[in-house]
Length: 492
Ligand code: NOJ
Image 1: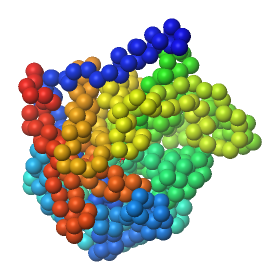
Image 2 (image 1 turned 30 degrees about the horizontal axis):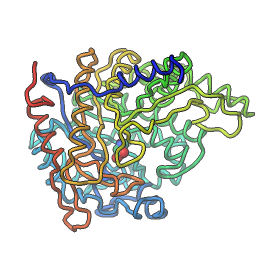
Image 3 (image 1 turned 90 degrees about the vertical axis):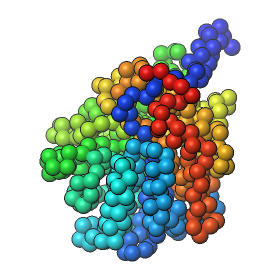
């Protein structure tokens, strides 16, 4: 190793080491919450008039893709046990509950021609139960479970979806908006588009990377903007809520202090987060995406960029369609510059053109890519402040998977360390107003099935009752929500 390399490694070790737990109180008014999503917890997949969605279809037609052939057919049975869920939230002392609406439970065809009343009643009851217990609902409208009929006519890469989503959003505001202050249009849109239509690791499993994922994103961003404007024009005055979108990203740490690696890390952040965030929080797609994708597309023989472009009017319509910033963050990468991949097949990964990896020495969790990097959340929060003009930020997901044991001391430490870095970011001057633990309880972790365990509460998936039991982390989180302090005693 060169001297320069050695010095860099030492610096990196220092910058990524976990400092002492921050012992400052979280500010008065800081909101703590816990999260789930419809397909992952509700079950009752075909009950009371609910329509089929793409995750129903995916798990039923490709059982081999999910660990143990698990499905969300019953999941945590929250469709029947929502009162228990709310009692758990109450016990945790959280300020809010982030959950999602199942589009096909409300609109079985996906369109507003047929509203499924039992589905509407379920969410009304859940919201009422939350409010009666002093817990604010924070609702995600779309957490990956597209009604199957909408996929059958093309799904997100088809333009009709923009209007279909806008109408669904309007209906949600009409039905529930009087009792809801916080709305999220989409959860982790990159997973919808890259996972669903690019790399195929998520329903509906289409693999057309560098093409369908970009078109999907284009429509999804327009759909988000439509929903925000509908709220702004038709509901804000009376309902006085806030609307945003949850975008996920890893933190990308430059693998060295060389200019090339610093640029590579920024490029990765722009492709991962800026792809969605730049049109909404700034304007248009990031320059680096526009340039790189156009260059590679032309070299590949396309007549124009594979990245669709917004008109000036669309750019203006989309820019500013947020009332706060919502971010999901779990882990980090080291990112280095690399030789340009020779031109060939279109690919999002080749379009980014960097080398991102997680060193073996970083602490593992039970799922390979969820390495534990609490320091990354502080860096990310500072980067968000700088890059997007100091928005008010809520972390809408953070957590770690483990083996599901009740005495989950590692999860306690992970929550403490990430929260400590969030608290430090607040001291750095970042305007963070809330934090959400993923997840309230063990649930259907997509391709990991029930083997992926993120819960503060254990769920016994072998029992017909889906018995819930608090883990050690639930007790810790309860203490944090009560005292706003991560250690035994805190300073103001
Ligand atoms: C991202 C997703 O929003 C959620 O559905 C998932 O379970 C967690 N992160 C953990 O992977």
